[in-house]
Image (tube, rainbow, N blue to C red; front, side, top):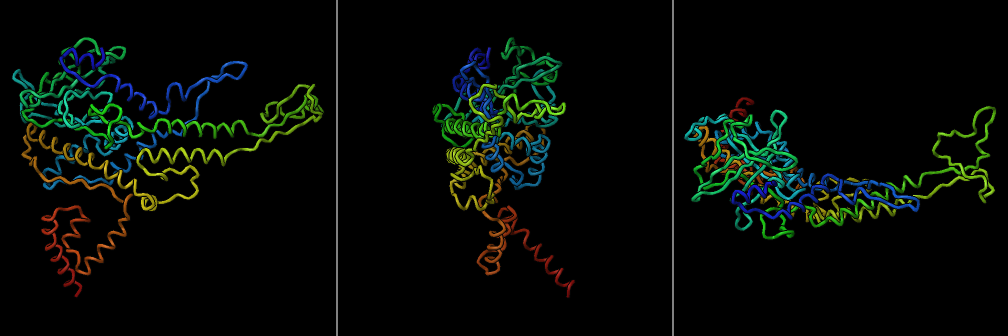
Length: 473
């Protein structure tokens, strides 16, 4: 049975399987190997040739670039409390979040949706259930859309959801299924595991019989009405199936342009393969001279023609002209269309590579990237904040850490791609010197502090400045 069939068997309805077949198409473009397109057959009048089309693999490049713009090493998550900041930083670091978050952002833009699922591990279990405060840690599961099955949603927000994953233990594959659903408004998390054979979930097994799942309870009563998973996706309307809460690939509406780019690039490569220089020779030109052949029979530039050719020349060079300019124009036209349809504007990708513009120059010439980036940041910011709050909540309920779950959280994205920060800093320094900008406003902006923190730090800074001045005098 598929996961969708298993969920129906358990009484849950989810998204139709047709949508996941669309995801498979986006995934094939992400891999750069689309069935029936990148591998095809051509008849040459004598037989059928198996061909492989060359690809620019823009299905990988586009989501990768969006991930680097949105979730890079300069993104800073700031929590107002030190204990809260340290705890969240520790959990994220233990789960390789900096690396995985960028990877999941890329996959979300390629496939449409991704999810972060924090869960408690190492908690002591009894017949009555897990013991509060006994957890050994918090683990983040990173899941892509093929394993996300919405069960309930409102206004595009998934409120109940199932997640599947394939795990291997002692050479055997298992399908682990988490079901987050509400009971009287409070979330329960069902944990189920199945034998996994030939791509299907078979009979259900006891969690205690599978290594590594002995301490996983069949049901976790969270005791909260807040969900324990976070859904991430591009901020793009789903025009494949507007009624479901899953996102679409950033290139979902640019498949034809992806095809055009690869057709043009494949022709460009073949232009060089087919247009290389040949020298046609008659058999008489291959006669031996002093025991050695006139031409090297292993040299691919020579092609021996039959003796009865009409041309009287013994040696005929063929030097085909290459249509590189036409091909470059064709590829660039497709890249411009692709860049525009995927939110970068019209000049983000340049095939010629002659004059590489800096990021600031590119954005200053085209404000489409600015608007699109800010639009995607709306969802990503809410994702990161909600993830932090779930981690804080689990730290309290499962580990008794006494954390403030309502702490102020801010996300500082890397806007250096949008604006020249050095120029902005210099401008604000001038405003500060002129008395137009307050010193605490300057500090809050450039050190990513809230107003209270910035103001509290200033007296100490002034004291240090005074002490340093007195030492100099």
